[in-house]
Image (cartoon, rainbow, N blue to C red; front, side, top):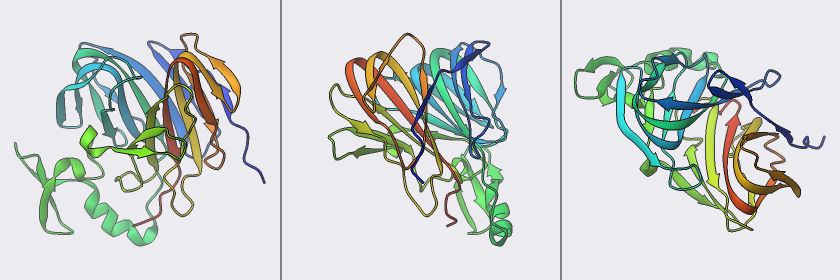
Length: 269
């Protein structure tokens, strides 16, 4: 059966946020664009795996028991390299200062396979964290390792951890979360489109993964999506896609930013 043609949707406003929700997909849950100014108060991630990508501005972020100051620094999503924050399920987070715009992508967390339950449970949460060291004990290896590396811990994703991928058409994108990241169902890429250079987002592939995809578009100009013009009018767009039929995006004028979200169940390792 051929893959479905991508659908173009417009996020709705929920308070100060712009929100796109997928109520029919198995894995994809929502994309949320938020404006942070000063002290945001504490938010909480849903019962999902999420990643917060700073689109613009500089923020003092916190999540769980960790803090990251002065994160961001790009003035628009159309320039500069990404900085992101992984948010495990039901994680408190927010910003204590600065101003900026963030995009939060959330997907359903696949369950552990039965054979891995005992091992997975033992490695999920950091044990005996050493105060002030940023490390915790891993009972499966007997080692002390960075607290951020545990699956149930939030983690800052800085440019040195992000891979730039070149495509056959001459376009490139940033792989923020790939197959090797600790998420069980979420992977994320971003790209700033170059005028006249076609971009077709390429999923990180493994057996049976990914099974769903969506692309968030920020537009200040005009993009061809599989030859169909999409003109920026101040509102982001969401392309609901099949990983087997990702649309070709070509920037005709102005500027455009794309965040591709991949969802499904990653193969067990």
